[in-house]
Length: 472
Image (cartoon, rainbow, N blue to C red):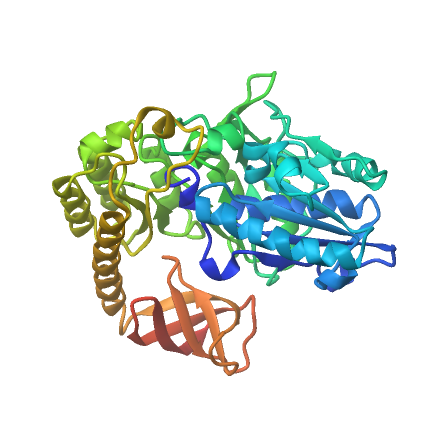
């Protein structure tokens, strides 16, 4: 959300990525599954659950569309252009289906939940529509579709967390992994579709989260990111009265092993507590990085967005966090041109950015989503060209702040977890430091999963460039 969904958007380079199983999991079974995922980290994590469900039911994966017996598109409904990209892909799959009449195409995820049976009517290529809480039913839906009938299940659950399903790590680098700790969202931000597409908030059993994390570490993974629409509202209680909040869960996961890095996303300004920040400070392996979406720097707009905090509250949260962890790094989300936003209110967003100086930001123009409170109550009255102009100002300012932040790191030495080979130079490696900044450096015989000490020699606004000075 931009707030509870768009704060999870992953790098655009991963949008529409075809996900394949690790080679050792490709079996000799005859049916082949091809998955494409769009949108947020939660969607990619869900695709890993689906791959596990389908592997148990006779479908190994393929990265080759031409081999597929079943195509699943895990969709995003955050903005209209995200849905249009999916519709364009469905047109492409229609051509593939003409070559292979037995091929089945399914739409899953948030777009499936939002449009439901409309997808079956509008997109003739679609055979299956399945919402985020019905992935266990996919094998039965496939069986129905194989008889020539259309199959749909978009039931939203108040209990489903998929806690007992061991995800298959798709497109994995073998070093970092996502672990879902909760599903759904109870925050009714006026611009956001997540409460309608992912249902009410429910937290997963903490012991299953710790077990999954421990298993990942045993398999060689060195970093986990705990995922939720609003991780700070995580709360689990069993019948015997045992209760765990997010600070408690963080503490439990951090104790799995000191060499396992722990990150989380996303925090909500109204819910993040001093207890969570103190837990971060307590454990060296919990990274000093928080994604704290602000959306707007103006209190009237924040109220209209139903964010349930104002400008002062947000700045107080930032001050509290920095008082406990001075070298914390922040990223955020910003929406430009929300309903009735004036030029002066836009300037308030710029001034808040000046005050906080975020290390990174996801920045978007407002995109009205059908069914949301904003779509029902407010006129989308800021002209598109004004939205785009404001977005460019926000991007320019953020680029300045990111470069300033990175320049302060030149000359410093950071502990870096190597994630793989640099995209631009096969002789260089890449990895992130504690503050979630990407570093690129010469390999010197090291490999993914190693921790190294890297001295920063120069930088761009996006990357720190350095050299290994010592190993750990």
